[in-house]
Amino acid sequence: MRNPSQVGAAVIGSGFIGTVHIEALRRLGVQVHGLLGSSPERAAARAEQLGVPRGYASLSELLADDRVEIVHVTSPNHLHHDQVRDVLAAGRHVICEKPLAMTSEESADLVRLASDSGRIAALNFNIRFYPLNQHARELVAAGSLGDVRLVTGRYFQDWLLHETDWNWRLEPDRGGALRAVGDIGSHWLDLMTFITGRRVTSVMADLATFISTRRQPSGPVETFSTERAGETVERAIETEDTATILLRFEGGARGSVAISQLSPGRKNSLQYEVDGSEAATAWDSEQPDQLWIGHRDRPNEILIRNPALMGPAAAAAAALPAGHVEGFADTFRSLFRAIYADVAEGAPAADPAYPTFADGHDEMLVGDAVARSAREGRWVDVERSA
View 1 (cartoon, one colour):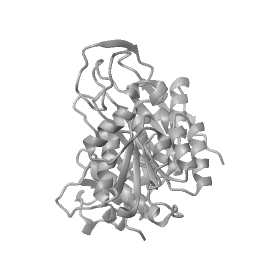
View 2 (cartoon, helix red, strand yellow; view 1 turned 90 degrees about the horizontal axis):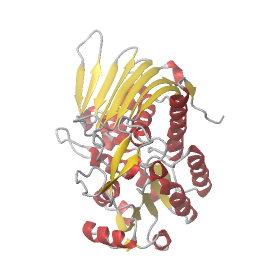
View 3 (cartoon, one colour; view 1 turned 30 degrees about the vertical axis):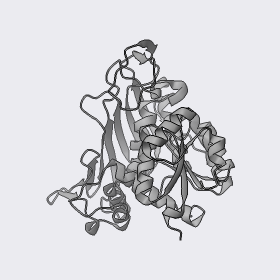
Protein backbone atom coordinates (compact mmCIF):
# COMPACT_ATOMS: atom_id res chain seq x y z
CA MET A 1 0.00 0.00 0.00
CA ARG A 2 1.22 3.49 -0.80
CA ASN A 3 1.92 5.97 1.94
CA PRO A 4 -0.50 8.97 2.11
CA SER A 5 2.45 11.24 1.38
CA GLN A 6 2.48 9.76 -2.11
CA VAL A 7 -1.12 10.87 -2.77
CA GLY A 8 -1.80 14.26 -4.33
CA ALA A 9 -4.85 16.26 -3.27
CA ALA A 10 -6.55 19.58 -3.95
CA VAL A 11 -9.22 21.44 -1.96
CA ILE A 12 -12.19 23.40 -3.30
CA GLY A 13 -13.14 26.07 -0.78
CA SER A 14 -11.00 28.52 1.12
CA GLY A 15 -13.14 29.19 4.19
CA PHE A 16 -13.30 27.69 7.68
CA ILE A 17 -13.88 24.05 6.73
CA GLY A 18 -11.57 24.11 3.72
CA THR A 19 -8.79 25.24 6.04
CA VAL A 20 -9.58 22.42 8.48
CA HIS A 21 -9.32 19.92 5.60
CA ILE A 22 -5.93 21.27 4.55
CA GLU A 23 -4.52 21.15 8.07
CA ALA A 24 -5.76 17.58 8.62
CA LEU A 25 -4.23 16.45 5.33
CA ARG A 26 -0.90 17.93 6.32
CA ARG A 27 -0.97 15.90 9.54
CA LEU A 28 -1.29 12.77 7.40
CA GLY A 29 1.56 13.85 5.14
CA VAL A 30 -0.72 14.23 2.10
CA GLN A 31 0.56 16.60 -0.57
CA VAL A 32 -1.99 19.41 -1.04
CA HIS A 33 -1.05 20.79 -4.45
CA GLY A 34 -3.50 23.67 -4.52
CA LEU A 35 -6.85 25.14 -3.63
CA LEU A 36 -9.73 26.68 -5.54
CA GLY A 37 -11.54 29.66 -4.05
CA SER A 38 -14.55 31.75 -4.99
CA SER A 39 -12.33 33.81 -7.31
CA PRO A 40 -8.78 33.53 -8.66
CA GLU A 41 -7.77 36.41 -6.39
CA ARG A 42 -9.30 34.75 -3.32
CA ALA A 43 -7.60 31.44 -4.16
CA ALA A 44 -4.21 33.06 -4.62
CA ALA A 45 -4.48 35.04 -1.38
CA ARG A 46 -5.61 32.07 0.74
CA ALA A 47 -3.02 29.77 -0.83
CA GLU A 48 -0.31 32.20 0.22
CA GLN A 49 -1.76 32.55 3.74
CA LEU A 50 -1.99 28.79 4.23
CA GLY A 51 1.30 27.91 2.58
CA VAL A 52 -0.39 25.96 -0.24
CA PRO A 53 1.71 25.92 -3.42
CA ARG A 54 -0.98 27.06 -5.82
CA GLY A 55 -4.27 28.89 -6.08
CA TYR A 56 -6.22 27.52 -9.06
CA ALA A 57 -8.08 30.01 -11.24
CA SER A 58 -10.83 27.53 -12.15
CA LEU A 59 -12.03 23.97 -11.63
CA SER A 60 -10.85 23.03 -15.10
CA GLU A 61 -7.36 24.25 -14.17
CA LEU A 62 -7.48 22.15 -10.99
CA LEU A 63 -8.57 19.04 -12.89
CA ALA A 64 -5.82 19.61 -15.46
CA ASP A 65 -3.26 19.13 -12.67
CA ASP A 66 -2.23 15.49 -13.15
CA ARG A 67 -0.73 15.33 -9.66
CA VAL A 68 -4.18 15.59 -8.07
CA GLU A 69 -5.77 12.18 -7.40
CA ILE A 70 -8.45 13.28 -4.95
CA VAL A 71 -10.44 16.48 -4.55
CA HIS A 72 -11.99 17.78 -1.32
CA VAL A 73 -15.19 19.74 -2.04
CA THR A 74 -15.86 22.25 0.78
CA SER A 75 -17.64 24.93 -1.27
CA PRO A 76 -21.16 26.29 -0.56
CA ASN A 77 -23.89 23.68 -0.92
CA HIS A 78 -25.32 24.88 -4.24
CA LEU A 79 -21.99 24.14 -5.95
CA HIS A 80 -21.59 20.56 -4.73
CA HIS A 81 -23.52 18.72 -7.43
CA ASP A 82 -21.84 20.27 -10.46
CA GLN A 83 -18.37 20.29 -8.94
CA VAL A 84 -18.54 16.68 -7.76
CA ARG A 85 -19.96 15.61 -11.12
CA ASP A 86 -17.00 17.21 -12.90
CA VAL A 87 -14.48 15.74 -10.46
CA LEU A 88 -15.85 12.22 -10.97
CA ALA A 89 -16.00 12.69 -14.74
CA ALA A 90 -12.31 13.58 -14.63
CA GLY A 91 -11.55 10.25 -12.96
CA ARG A 92 -10.66 11.67 -9.55
CA HIS A 93 -11.66 10.44 -6.12
CA VAL A 94 -13.74 12.90 -4.09
CA ILE A 95 -14.59 13.86 -0.52
CA CYS A 96 -17.60 16.16 -0.26
CA GLU A 97 -18.84 18.22 2.64
CA LYS A 98 -22.41 17.70 3.81
CA PRO A 99 -25.08 18.12 2.68
CA LEU A 100 -24.16 16.17 -0.43
CA ALA A 101 -26.39 18.29 -2.66
CA MET A 102 -29.26 20.76 -2.66
CA THR A 103 -31.97 18.15 -3.33
CA SER A 104 -32.39 14.40 -3.03
CA GLU A 105 -32.69 14.23 -6.83
CA GLU A 106 -29.21 15.74 -7.12
CA SER A 107 -27.79 13.49 -4.39
CA ALA A 108 -29.28 10.39 -6.07
CA ASP A 109 -27.58 11.46 -9.28
CA LEU A 110 -24.23 11.74 -7.50
CA VAL A 111 -24.63 8.30 -5.93
CA ARG A 112 -25.20 6.86 -9.42
CA LEU A 113 -22.28 8.74 -10.94
CA ALA A 114 -19.97 7.66 -8.13
CA SER A 115 -20.98 4.03 -8.52
CA ASP A 116 -20.45 4.14 -12.28
CA SER A 117 -17.05 5.80 -11.87
CA GLY A 118 -15.57 3.23 -9.50
CA ARG A 119 -13.91 6.11 -7.67
CA ILE A 120 -13.93 6.69 -3.92
CA ALA A 121 -16.81 9.01 -3.06
CA ALA A 122 -16.84 9.90 0.63
CA LEU A 123 -18.86 12.33 2.70
CA ASN A 124 -17.53 14.39 5.59
CA PHE A 125 -19.67 13.15 8.46
CA ASN A 126 -16.59 13.60 10.63
CA ILE A 127 -18.36 13.37 14.00
CA ARG A 128 -18.46 9.60 13.58
CA PHE A 129 -14.70 9.69 14.06
CA TYR A 130 -14.53 10.89 17.62
CA PRO A 131 -13.03 7.70 19.09
CA LEU A 132 -15.74 7.30 21.74
CA ASN A 133 -18.45 7.42 19.06
CA GLN A 134 -16.72 4.54 17.34
CA HIS A 135 -16.71 2.78 20.72
CA ALA A 136 -20.41 3.49 21.25
CA ARG A 137 -21.17 1.87 17.92
CA GLU A 138 -19.17 -1.18 18.94
CA LEU A 139 -21.07 -1.37 22.25
CA VAL A 140 -24.41 -1.41 20.43
CA ALA A 141 -23.22 -3.93 17.83
CA ALA A 142 -21.93 -6.26 20.57
CA GLY A 143 -25.30 -6.18 22.34
CA SER A 144 -23.89 -4.47 25.43
CA LEU A 145 -26.89 -2.13 25.63
CA GLY A 146 -29.44 -4.80 24.79
CA ASP A 147 -32.24 -3.85 22.41
CA VAL A 148 -32.13 -0.17 21.44
CA ARG A 149 -35.35 1.48 22.58
CA LEU A 150 -34.92 5.25 22.84
CA VAL A 151 -32.54 7.66 21.05
CA THR A 152 -32.59 11.27 22.19
CA GLY A 153 -30.41 14.35 21.94
CA ARG A 154 -29.74 17.76 20.53
CA TYR A 155 -27.37 19.85 18.44
CA PHE A 156 -27.18 23.46 19.66
CA GLN A 157 -25.08 26.39 18.46
CA ASP A 158 -25.39 30.16 18.98
CA TRP A 159 -23.50 31.63 16.03
CA LEU A 160 -26.70 32.91 14.36
CA LEU A 161 -28.28 34.29 17.54
CA HIS A 162 -28.40 37.95 16.51
CA GLU A 163 -30.23 39.56 13.62
CA THR A 164 -26.88 40.98 12.48
CA ASP A 165 -25.34 37.48 12.21
CA TRP A 166 -25.01 36.45 8.59
CA ASN A 167 -23.69 33.56 6.50
CA TRP A 168 -24.40 32.17 3.05
CA ARG A 169 -26.21 29.25 4.72
CA LEU A 170 -29.08 31.65 5.41
CA GLU A 171 -29.73 31.97 1.67
CA PRO A 172 -31.92 29.09 0.38
CA ASP A 173 -30.51 29.34 -3.13
CA ARG A 174 -27.01 28.70 -1.74
CA GLY A 175 -27.61 26.63 1.39
CA GLY A 176 -30.80 24.73 0.57
CA ALA A 177 -34.39 24.68 1.79
CA LEU A 178 -33.40 23.28 5.20
CA ARG A 179 -30.78 25.22 7.13
CA ALA A 180 -30.39 24.11 10.78
CA VAL A 181 -31.48 20.57 9.93
CA GLY A 182 -29.35 20.35 6.79
CA ASP A 183 -26.29 21.97 8.30
CA ILE A 184 -25.96 20.49 11.80
CA GLY A 185 -29.03 18.28 12.21
CA SER A 186 -27.74 16.00 9.45
CA HIS A 187 -24.63 15.33 11.57
CA TRP A 188 -26.75 14.21 14.56
CA LEU A 189 -29.06 12.07 12.44
CA ASP A 190 -26.17 10.39 10.62
CA LEU A 191 -24.35 9.78 13.91
CA MET A 192 -27.37 8.08 15.45
CA THR A 193 -27.82 5.88 12.39
CA PHE A 194 -24.11 5.01 12.57
CA ILE A 195 -24.09 4.20 16.29
CA THR A 196 -27.38 2.29 16.43
CA GLY A 197 -27.12 0.61 13.03
CA ARG A 198 -30.73 1.67 12.44
CA ARG A 199 -32.02 4.16 9.88
CA VAL A 200 -34.76 6.69 10.54
CA THR A 201 -38.03 5.43 9.03
CA SER A 202 -40.46 8.27 9.80
CA VAL A 203 -40.52 11.73 11.37
CA MET A 204 -42.81 14.28 12.97
CA ALA A 205 -41.16 17.69 12.67
CA ASP A 206 -41.76 21.25 13.81
CA LEU A 207 -39.57 23.99 12.29
CA ALA A 208 -39.42 27.56 13.56
CA THR A 209 -37.88 30.81 12.29
CA PHE A 210 -37.60 33.23 15.21
CA ILE A 211 -35.56 35.87 13.37
CA SER A 212 -37.68 36.56 10.32
CA THR A 213 -35.56 39.49 9.13
CA ARG A 214 -31.78 39.80 9.29
CA ARG A 215 -29.19 42.41 8.35
CA GLN A 216 -26.97 41.15 5.53
CA PRO A 217 -23.52 42.81 5.33
CA SER A 218 -22.56 44.33 2.02
CA GLY A 219 -19.34 42.27 1.88
CA PRO A 220 -18.43 38.60 2.44
CA VAL A 221 -18.58 37.11 5.96
CA GLU A 222 -16.52 34.14 7.17
CA THR A 223 -18.36 31.30 8.94
CA PHE A 224 -18.39 31.84 12.74
CA SER A 225 -16.93 35.34 12.30
CA THR A 226 -17.88 37.87 15.00
CA GLU A 227 -16.94 40.88 12.89
CA ARG A 228 -19.80 43.22 12.05
CA ALA A 229 -19.85 45.15 8.79
CA GLY A 230 -20.99 48.79 8.90
CA GLU A 231 -23.29 48.77 5.86
CA THR A 232 -26.10 46.20 5.74
CA VAL A 233 -29.28 45.44 3.87
CA GLU A 234 -32.47 43.99 5.35
CA ARG A 235 -33.25 40.44 4.21
CA ALA A 236 -36.28 38.22 4.87
CA ILE A 237 -35.35 34.76 6.22
CA GLU A 238 -37.08 31.69 4.83
CA THR A 239 -35.15 28.89 6.55
CA GLU A 240 -35.49 27.48 10.08
CA ASP A 241 -33.57 28.66 13.14
CA THR A 242 -34.65 25.64 15.19
CA ALA A 243 -36.22 22.22 14.74
CA THR A 244 -37.80 19.70 17.08
CA ILE A 245 -38.28 16.26 15.55
CA LEU A 246 -39.84 13.02 16.78
CA LEU A 247 -38.25 9.96 15.21
CA ARG A 248 -39.01 6.32 14.51
CA PHE A 249 -36.14 3.98 13.69
CA GLU A 250 -35.81 0.59 12.06
CA GLY A 251 -36.45 -2.15 14.59
CA GLY A 252 -39.04 -0.11 16.49
CA ALA A 253 -36.84 2.29 18.46
CA ARG A 254 -38.21 5.78 19.12
CA GLY A 255 -36.37 9.06 19.40
CA SER A 256 -36.36 12.83 19.46
CA VAL A 257 -33.89 15.59 18.65
CA ALA A 258 -33.81 19.37 19.08
CA ILE A 259 -31.68 21.44 16.71
CA SER A 260 -30.85 25.12 17.13
CA GLN A 261 -28.48 27.71 15.73
CA LEU A 262 -29.48 30.39 18.24
CA SER A 263 -29.01 28.86 21.72
CA PRO A 264 -26.95 31.37 23.76
CA GLY A 265 -23.68 29.98 25.07
CA ARG A 266 -23.84 26.75 23.10
CA LYS A 267 -20.93 26.96 20.68
CA ASN A 268 -21.02 23.43 19.26
CA SER A 269 -22.95 21.14 21.58
CA LEU A 270 -24.01 17.83 20.08
CA GLN A 271 -25.44 15.49 22.72
CA TYR A 272 -27.06 12.08 22.49
CA GLU A 273 -28.28 9.27 24.70
CA VAL A 274 -29.03 5.76 23.48
CA ASP A 275 -31.15 3.76 25.92
CA GLY A 276 -31.26 0.00 25.56
CA SER A 277 -32.96 -2.80 27.46
CA GLU A 278 -29.78 -3.55 29.43
CA ALA A 279 -27.75 -0.31 29.54
CA ALA A 280 -27.49 3.19 28.11
CA THR A 281 -24.75 5.41 26.75
CA ALA A 282 -24.45 9.18 26.36
CA TRP A 283 -21.92 11.65 24.93
CA ASP A 284 -21.43 15.41 24.52
CA SER A 285 -19.22 16.90 21.81
CA GLU A 286 -18.07 19.63 24.22
CA GLN A 287 -16.70 16.89 26.52
CA PRO A 288 -15.49 14.58 23.74
CA ASP A 289 -13.17 12.36 25.79
CA GLN A 290 -15.92 11.10 28.11
CA LEU A 291 -18.58 8.47 27.39
CA TRP A 292 -21.25 7.89 30.02
CA ILE A 293 -22.53 4.31 30.38
CA GLY A 294 -25.65 3.88 32.51
CA HIS A 295 -26.87 0.84 34.44
CA ARG A 296 -29.90 -0.06 36.56
CA ASP A 297 -28.40 -2.49 39.07
CA ARG A 298 -24.78 -1.43 39.37
CA PRO A 299 -22.87 1.85 39.42
CA ASN A 300 -22.83 3.96 36.29
CA GLU A 301 -19.54 4.40 34.45
CA ILE A 302 -17.64 7.19 32.74
CA LEU A 303 -15.18 5.87 30.20
CA ILE A 304 -12.35 8.30 29.58
CA ARG A 305 -11.04 7.86 26.05
CA ASN A 306 -8.25 5.30 26.24
CA PRO A 307 -7.13 3.21 23.25
CA ALA A 308 -6.26 0.36 25.62
CA LEU A 309 -9.86 0.17 26.91
CA MET A 310 -11.83 0.67 23.70
CA GLY A 311 -12.82 -1.54 20.81
CA PRO A 312 -10.60 -1.92 17.73
CA ALA A 313 -12.40 0.67 15.56
CA ALA A 314 -12.33 3.19 18.41
CA ALA A 315 -8.65 2.54 19.09
CA ALA A 316 -7.88 2.98 15.40
CA ALA A 317 -9.60 6.39 15.42
CA ALA A 318 -7.49 7.59 18.34
CA ALA A 319 -4.16 9.27 17.65
CA LEU A 320 -3.15 10.18 21.19
CA PRO A 321 -2.77 8.18 24.42
CA ALA A 322 -5.25 8.46 27.28
CA GLY A 323 -5.30 11.80 29.07
CA HIS A 324 -4.47 13.79 25.93
CA VAL A 325 -7.77 15.23 24.72
CA GLU A 326 -8.71 14.71 21.08
CA GLY A 327 -11.20 17.11 19.54
CA PHE A 328 -12.91 18.41 16.42
CA ALA A 329 -9.84 18.77 14.20
CA ASP A 330 -8.67 15.28 15.12
CA THR A 331 -11.83 13.72 13.68
CA PHE A 332 -10.88 14.97 10.22
CA ARG A 333 -7.47 13.33 10.47
CA SER A 334 -9.04 10.02 11.54
CA LEU A 335 -11.70 10.16 8.83
CA PHE A 336 -9.21 11.07 6.12
CA ARG A 337 -6.84 8.33 7.23
CA ALA A 338 -9.62 5.78 6.66
CA ILE A 339 -10.49 7.26 3.26
CA TYR A 340 -6.90 7.56 2.08
CA ALA A 341 -6.29 3.89 2.89
CA ASP A 342 -8.71 3.15 0.05
CA VAL A 343 -7.21 5.89 -2.12
CA ALA A 344 -3.86 4.16 -1.75
CA GLU A 345 -5.51 0.96 -3.02
CA GLY A 346 -7.11 2.84 -5.92
CA ALA A 347 -10.74 1.84 -5.27
CA PRO A 348 -13.32 1.80 -2.47
CA ALA A 349 -13.44 -1.20 -0.16
CA ALA A 350 -16.46 -3.50 -0.31
CA ASP A 351 -17.57 -2.18 3.10
CA PRO A 352 -15.98 1.26 3.55
CA ALA A 353 -15.07 2.32 7.09
CA TYR A 354 -16.13 5.89 6.28
CA PRO A 355 -19.41 7.57 5.24
CA THR A 356 -20.12 7.42 1.52
CA PHE A 357 -22.36 9.25 -0.92
CA ALA A 358 -25.05 6.67 -0.13
CA ASP A 359 -25.04 7.87 3.48
CA GLY A 360 -25.25 11.47 2.30
CA HIS A 361 -28.17 10.66 0.03
CA ASP A 362 -30.01 8.90 2.84
CA GLU A 363 -29.77 12.02 4.99
CA MET A 364 -31.20 14.03 2.08
CA LEU A 365 -34.19 11.65 2.05
CA VAL A 366 -34.65 12.11 5.81
CA GLY A 367 -34.50 15.86 5.22
CA ASP A 368 -37.24 15.59 2.60
CA ALA A 369 -39.44 13.84 5.16
CA VAL A 370 -38.65 16.48 7.81
CA ALA A 371 -39.61 19.33 5.45
CA ARG A 372 -42.80 17.63 4.35
CA SER A 373 -43.79 16.79 7.94
CA ALA A 374 -43.31 20.40 9.02
CA ARG A 375 -45.43 21.64 6.10
CA GLU A 376 -48.25 19.16 6.62
CA GLY A 377 -48.18 18.83 10.41
CA ARG A 378 -48.15 15.02 10.48
CA TRP A 379 -45.96 11.95 10.62
CA VAL A 380 -44.18 11.32 7.31
CA ASP A 381 -42.33 8.19 6.22
CA VAL A 382 -38.83 8.46 4.74
CA GLU A 383 -39.27 7.47 1.10
CA ARG A 384 -36.55 5.09 -0.03
CA SER A 385 -36.53 3.03 -3.20
CA ALA A 386 -36.74 -0.70 -2.71
